[in-house]
Length: 313
Image 1 (cartoon, one colour):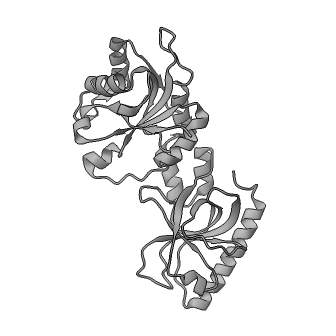
Image 2 (spheres, rainbow, N blue to C red; image 1 turned 45 degrees about the vertical axis):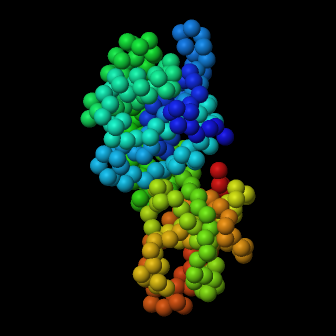
Image 3 (cartoon, rainbow, N blue to C red; image 1 turned 45 degrees about the horizontal axis):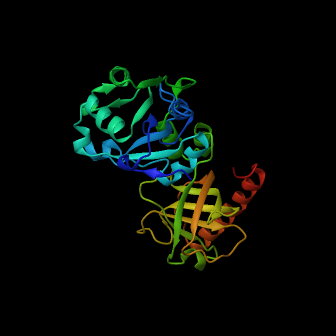
């Protein structure tokens, strides 16, 4: 797996793809492709490097919570096949936000990353008050002898490819549209923790996942899903994402996964979940018997959907 580094620990000289790249959709990959296989004017190979900010600038500047489609560790696996040699996360702070565009390029991209080439999307903004744009980066790069490639926006019908569109699809439970825009299945992972075994008492034992709070999750509901235990083979599963309005209406939202046709002790294991289709929204049942009947119906429908599918990617 490619390394995750801080700016002062990065290897150089570099060819930098600069941006958030959350979701790594097709538009992002065009920016990244612009820096792979690059050399300096003197013929020195440049290490293809993706540079992003962490945390998201809006979290620092405005207190906005920005959940990620891809956490850094997940992004490493996605970047390596694209020819990237390292992922560098620049710690975003108020001090960094006050740098002028020229100072940011000099202090971060030149002094720390030894950038010999830079690629950005045409909507890229940087520097104090977002005063720098792609044209400014080209101008600054020319003065420093650094080539800058500005990649045009990529359109998909009337809308452009964007992380926001992927989030909207997930927020509505449309896994198929999210997968189309990502050009890969949406997945998330979590460690299985000890629960209150309410599912076991109902005859449907579940693995309770502790998911990183910075990960963007789809709409609450019940899903057909594939699940992998500690990176193993995919198993058919049903996932409940959300509260438990019938058995414990005051409990917080949770992620629970039932492996269809399997009974395993999973506490402590890492479970990767690939939700495939939204079966139904959350609902409250009149009693536990009605809930158990619905869970059985959910399991049967999930099994049929997953058997009919081509299988996990």
